[in-house]
Amino acid sequence: NAGVTQTPKFQVLKTGQSMTLQCAQDMNHNSMYWYRQDPGMGLRLIYYSASEGTTDKGEVPNGYNVSRLNKREFSLRLESAAPSQTSVYFCASSERPVMEIYGYTFGSGTRLTVV
Amino acid sequence: SQQGEEDPQALSIQEGENATMNCSYKTSINNLQWYRQNSGRGLVHLILIRSNEREKHSGRLRVTLDTSKKSSSLLITASRAADTASYFCATVLYSGNTPLVFGKGTRLSVIA
Image (cartoon, rainbow over all chains, first blue to last red; front, side, top):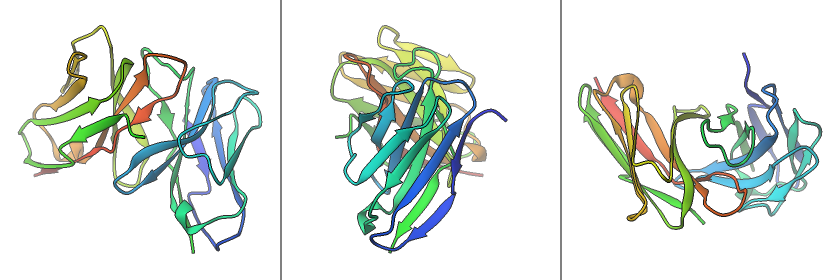
């Protein structure tokens, strides 16, 4: 089925470890996004890529880096994980950031725990 | 900072009743969208209303937008147990080419 695929679905890290969250979409979308979801906080934008070759910071970029590997793939890297980065991470994609008919398509999320 | 703020935070109703959720936002918008999130899943786009529209329907969903009050409401008619989920409003700011900004959500429980 067409959509956004995130890996892994679950991950436990120790403080200071690094990891990369992977995201791939097969809808030929230009724009991709990383959000984090914390209880009572809704979704907050970490980074986004409006088009292949560009990336921009969102509301909460500290402690993260991203790579738009190609049009399909957008990865999120935690260089030195901290307990404050315990969260559910969602990748999403769309034709462009400002959509006037359709919304964003979301992956099923990565549940990350940092101990 | 959060642009949209949903109200109430949680809502519990009986199957067959209507559910109304509200969203207020702070700055001018290009459009406003509503999403549903079932427990442990990703968000699913429900409906989009542009800033020059006042009301929009999709199946059992009715969305209104009042730009003078900077508010929107989502009405789900004849609720079903399967409607149990969290519902989020998300806004596209009027200026710039910036991504969606989400509210904190309303958790809806529909009791059979």
